[in-house]
Image (cartoon, rainbow, N blue to C red; front, top):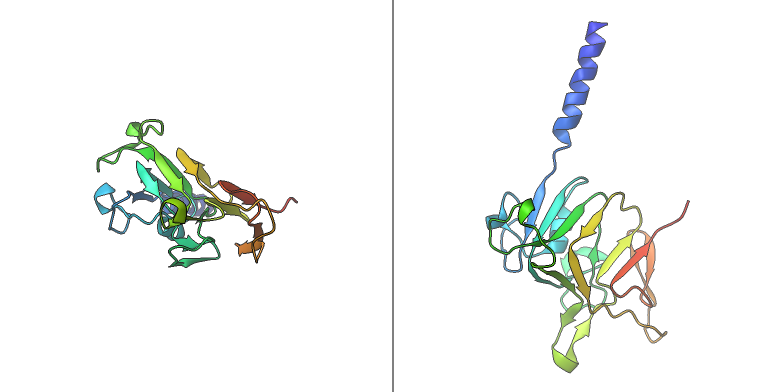
Length: 190
């Protein structure tokens, strides 16, 4: 009987040890891997989402972030692609509103003062600007993912049928380009 209790105790301890949260850091001018601290922050929010595992958190500093990866091919940077979007990942929590001072802690977070902006402008400027259809996409099973503390702007979902291909496949779900400029959520009800 003692051996069974000991085995169960070790399994529970192992479960808690492997459930450690990794925090990844993102700043507008980061050039690191995004792990460890703000001094090693990345500037690629989607890459940090891609590299995260369930339970991980991403802390995003004040500044503007534009999607640089096509929602149906998140492994490749594709500047100027109207299909670019930030795509949520299962059980990954993303928090904006940290000061861009390189030393921010959770208690420093204030999304009203330190605005983290997700913006759909993917190319050009002024009247020649190109905007993505969606800024954020939540498609398929995203579990307990979270997007908190962001300003989302300039999504350009088309309100008519002028687009050649009216949807894009993201995580096995068809996402319409006709609605959800800021955030589009596609899931299957059971």
